[in-house]
Image (tube, rainbow, N blue to C red):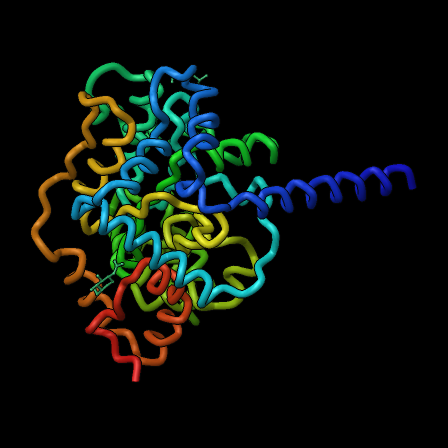
Length: 340
Ligand SMILES: *[C@@H]1O[C@H](CO)[C@@H](O)[C@H](O)[C@H]1NC(C)=O
Ligand SMILES: *[C@@H]1O[C@H](CO)[C@@H](O)[C@H](O)[C@H]1NC(C)=O
């Protein structure tokens, strides 16, 4: 009995924490300057303006073309959120695992896999001073090692709220089906993703093939795109556990209608959006690692090619699944889909 009671109280405390979380997604960038700088200076010892303060100052003056694009994206996200989201469950600290924290510079970055997140994590590690020199020199496996970077989920609700109010929050998104096509080719097609094929490929083969070949059953190495999509659309998949982060919807990882993001970066304009974000950090030497040169339109073509063999019925259901990411981040319906 005593134990149950304690549990109830713990639950009530957790709910209270969540209520607090919900109260704060105020339009922080629009806070009066006095409040903003008071928040900002507490950890920068008043020596430097916080990135959030700098963004606020920027938005007061005439906007550069780039700053105007970002203001419009922010507005569009807000409008899309109020139009398309209904009452949602309360956020808990563990929902914020993808929001990485830089306490020294006052940044929150929500990482979405397949959207340059390795390079963003490298930049955060460089900002934290744990690497000298070029962020590109940090090996990818080290970048993704758990616990290398603190996340908002590690803090108490009060500590989370303080950071949500005072820090500049940003995320990077990508055209949802190009991201999905990229996740599929990266995890199921290339020979070096044996771990994913072992974990998810074998599961897909077991579930979806009537008479699976023993080798496919053991290795999960030859999953077709259509099978991968059928797995995503199978209601059992999300009943068993959340989607893997590589194909989970960006809005489900970052909660952009619950947390206020100050900057919405896009993979399609990665270099200039990254420079825009880093401009608020105020470290002139710090550059976003340039991505390897790619042929123009490759990821669009890759998605178009993969989807051409998918029936309109499946295309429609998949579009419904990723619909919020299309709407919130202003991506238009791909022209190669046959939805009607
Ligand atoms: C949304 O997308 C349309 C079509 O690509 C574009 O013309 C418009 O400028 C975008 N709006 C914002 C706020 O990004
Ligand atoms: C790096 O991160 C740790 C833990 O988050 C923090 O205590 C430390 O001050 C950071 N160092 C710098 C130089 O930002």
